[in-house]
Image 1 (cartoon, rainbow, N blue to C red):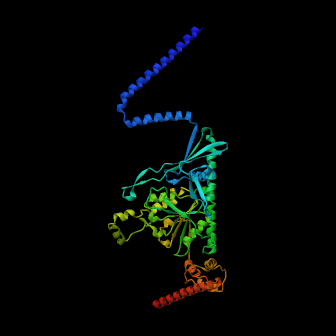
Image 2 (image 1 turned 120 degrees about the vertical axis):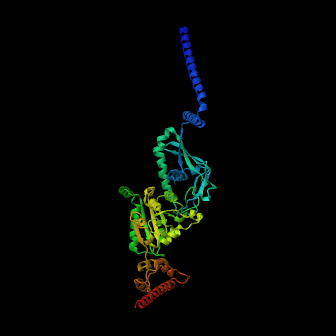
Image 3 (image 1 turned 90 degrees about the horizontal axis):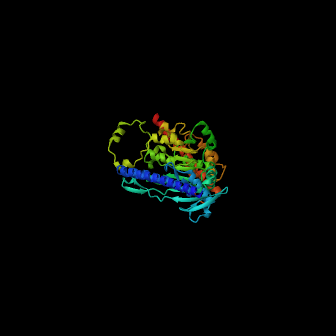
Length: 499
């Protein structure tokens, strides 16, 4: 019996030796063939296939040794075309939940309206913290690439070298047995909590496009928006004001409605009227009423249509995109406008190359595409506002319904507007001079802007309130009477000329 066992073992060992010998022969054959073919193959192709082979098997080996998985949340998404919302939400969540455990912190002012000197602390680069969710422990790492990418900047004649900004990201590390829990429950929980924290700490911002360097991390720079204008203090006919507020309420609460009718969640407002009628004040009141940010677009600082598209893509929801004095910004008439022979001759004259290169090349077509084309749907809950002093100068395609949905005329001061201004500036609701102001403002020949009325009502000394109010109203009445007398004189002169 022992002899038979020894014979079976010997036979098994001989079989193993034969298999290894066969494998060795096969390997030797492969090596021989490779030695014959490798000189004929390109080196890059060789490195590609060998590197891929090694990486694939290295990952398999690492999976057996290391059971942890990693999820990376980058600061930018869409090839750096816009900031990632998930990154911002994770940042807010970690600052509230886990920042106390970190040793390296970044400080940002977190004050909202009247918040004082409170700061928002977030994780510094290279810092690691942990979090526990439903019994599972996960780890967060803040990483930064360091900004080593080089570009040839066309803004400096093609000879300048600029460096890309840091690419920041969060890396979430967890055990693979918690994969479903993290993907299906934990990450949605982080996003929900982050949005709520961002809403509590949110400060309204006033953005402007920072031209000159297209390789900035963002095309926008901002300051805190602290304009005090509200619809209560806005000098406008109360009926028209109520109509605008109702329209804004319907837009803010209309997410499901816009989705049902198949339209991007945006709305356009055209504010037109003479200078001094409160167009900019109206925009500030809209932002304060809706609690939206403002993006002030300076078209003369935008080089091309592509740059304009990038600006609009980087805007976020709950915002008002403003282009003021659009009739004066850039030439948006394109080829629609017929030029006179004199203008054609002027266009044929040679133009300074440097001056022409720095001029904005934004076209009407490019502007229409970003406010009403396919790109307009990249983001929701945005209002686009154009202001102009001369609505007749604008191309009809730019201000048609569907692009500028609501046209609001900011007109001259009426008596209802005057009463709001008197309440704001003089804190009075009635005065014996109100009847004189009413009769003068009802004269169709007298046109005075709310800005001019406000200047007369502005207190200019520290006298008693009653005396100051009477003096301001008397000044306004005198100015209105002067305007009326001037109109009468002009009409008399025109009558004499006609006769």
